[in-house]
Amino acid sequence: MSSEGFGSGAVARECRRRRTFAIISHPDAGKSTMTEALALHARMISEAGAVHGKGGRRSTVSDWMEMEKARGISVSSTALQFAYDGEHSGDEPNVINLVDTPGHADFSEDTYRVLTAVDAAVMLIDAAKGLEPQTLKLFQVCRHRGIPVITVINKWDRPGQTPLELIDEITERIGLIPTPLFVPVGIAGDFRGLLDRRTGKFIKFSRTAGGAKVAPEEIVDAATAAETQGDAWIAAVEESELLGELGQDHDQEMFLAGQTSPMIFTSAMLNFGVRQLLEALVEFAPAPAGRTGIDGAERTVTDPFSAVVFKVQAGMDTSHRDRLAFMRIVSGQFERGMVVTHAQTGKPFATKYAQAVFGRDRSTVDTAYPGDVVGLVNAMALAPGDTLYIDPKVQYPPIPSFAPEHFSALRVTTADKYKQFRRAIDQLDAEGVVQVLRNDLRGDASPVLAAVGPMQFEVVTARMKAEFNVDTILEPLGYALARRTDEDSAADLSRQRGVEVFTRSDGVLLALFSDKWRLQFIEKEFPDLTLAALVAATD
Ligand code: G4P
Image 1 (cartoon, rainbow, N blue to C red):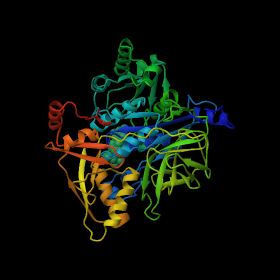
Image 2: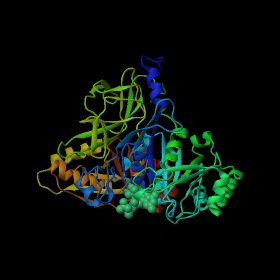
Image 3: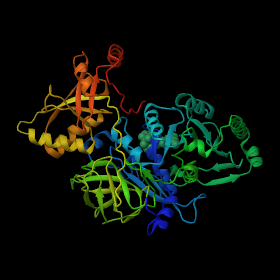
Image 4: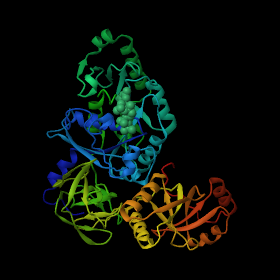
């Protein structure tokens, strides 16, 4: 790549102070509460309760679809940016980008795509429940993408497991070795503070009314802690020593390699341990780095502007009927209004309407740097995985589509609406809402939708109705898994019971199987057939 251009010193400086991460968790582990607590610590809000509006508080959570309101969920993923001036910050405050993953019980490809936009993840675990299914799935995606993970054991103010039980569970079930930076003082349910394993000191927390304010901290030396905290302190010291003997101390290289995970104990509700999480992010999470294009050329962060679209969302604002594309900046400085090139079409794209979006709040973005997430309004031509750049050309590898596990045929039920139906399918397909599969046998009237999570189907039918005024019905198909195949194998596969072959809209041939036993049987009987596993979140 070319030598550093004008202003690259500023870009390098902005990069160094940025951290872009997502919180991965099972619903109810406390992601919303933690998001709010982080914003509170960054002094972005003055009182907890302002961001997520639980329990009748002001809500800024997206309500872009009726479906979300009905279910009390947020399907949209957006980014919250805040400045944080902490112990480990340099001359200037850090800039933290928290990219929001949908917090509902179901999965969609969107959730996974969001993780392509971050440099680190915080795995938030409920102290009483330990590892839960959604956390596991998301963790696998992080592992697959090589995203380093910081582990947070939340709700320590409530009864739960012991630190060692939780550490064992994480080590045994996912092979990630936790390296606690702190050990809690007081068992789960009696959260007094943290033993800082590096300084040996006690960080004593005090409650504030309703957990609405940053919890005051007092740093206490070990001798005083032993006197005032008694057995709780002794237990924490013993645990810390045991971890040291086991070699479970932070190691930056192993963390970045995805082998170990710094661990923190928090109560997002009481704002305990939240500052420590921010400090860990600043100290250990990697700053934005360059990426390699499909031609193998490396684009460094100080090279000219480039970005990857990781999510496209329509109808976030029903009064405007807009379509937003969220891009993560990879290199260079973004200035609103600059004209960039869309790598997939070679066409120019004007960035006059650039926004930061978090929940219902939108603000215009004038300047942004690598690691930042910017929403582009009315980005009709952009799809997830697309690249935008300023010369010289770069195109980043596409975002992998994840292995679908749910398959339904979609049929239009409103008479005379077939044209709109086709247009809608094409648009939702281009946006990456679902994967669309077709074969000659079924024809075009009833395409098969393939999804990672069934909620993707609901989004399709709801948007068909709301945006295109088309009523549709879904007929679940009796298939449970898909494999990639080729022309040569397709004919043989089509003759088998419990198998059907389709062409996905990107041209990939997919064979669907009724169950894993059917697949195993066919693999055994016909070992020469091409049956490649797709990228699966559960690999
Ligand atoms: P989510 O976004 O991951 O789904 O979780 P959310 O923050 O909504 O938290 C789920 C529930 O857990 C909420 O209770 C929240 O108050 C509670 N919670 C979150 N963090 C902590 C914590 O550190 N300690 C304790 N004790 N509770 C915590 P809720 O009853 O569903 O809602 P609310 O009415 O209390 O807000």
